[in-house]
Amino acid sequence: MLNERLKILIVDDSNEICGFLKRILEKYGFFVYTSPDGLDGIQKAIETKPDLIFLDLMMPTFDGIKMLQVKQVLKEIENIPVIIISANTAKRNVIAALEAGAEKVLSKPLKEEKIIENINEVLGVNFSKAGKSKKMFSANEENELKKEMLNIFLQTFPEKKKIITEAIRNKESGKLKTVIHEFKGAGGTMGYDDLTKLSAEIEEKDFNSPTDWIFAQYKCNQIFQKIHSIKNKFQKQM
Image 1 (cartoon, rainbow, N blue to C red):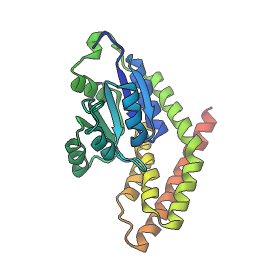
Image 2: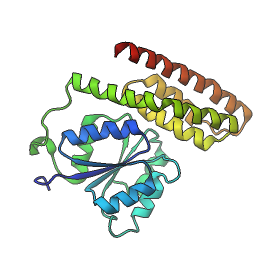
Image 3: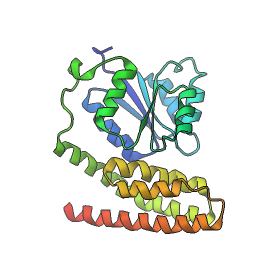
């Protein structure tokens, strides 16, 4: 296995997370495929036969648990190991993922050392000794990677802000939590823990009362202000 270029499929609706993982994995010599949701992920897995799948739990339309359940009954891909990546690693989610067939659950924000450690454990290899890469990203390389992620995040923010605004106006909690969940994961990975914290506060709400929606509007406005502040600072540095 170590003499071949291993294939990894990333299934996540976040462009930032996909880009971050892809850069790291390609540095270690992996061939990387990406997919934005579980249904497309199933098709990509059948077409590419990856050695490993990184799978997000919360995705619109067809989430990670559904993909795991479908994967388990398809002989072509049933034996491909899966590592779950999620910003929501509550005990019930971890148990559900493992019961559905996942090998490991890796919490966001993602760290390079943990990513490679989990790959080594699941595939039974050791890439540092195999000569794939003996060196982690330097501080400068890591900063450049975070800048790339932030640039992608800021480019897609106006559309996501529009979705959030409409979701609050129409009281669509599922749509709201889908985007907020993405903010939660991306914020931690890019180094903005306060953005992750604000997003988590919204994600934890049940939205069973009018006050929950008032709370969501207030917290989302804080998120918007935070992101606009990040954008202004980022533009000054360019």
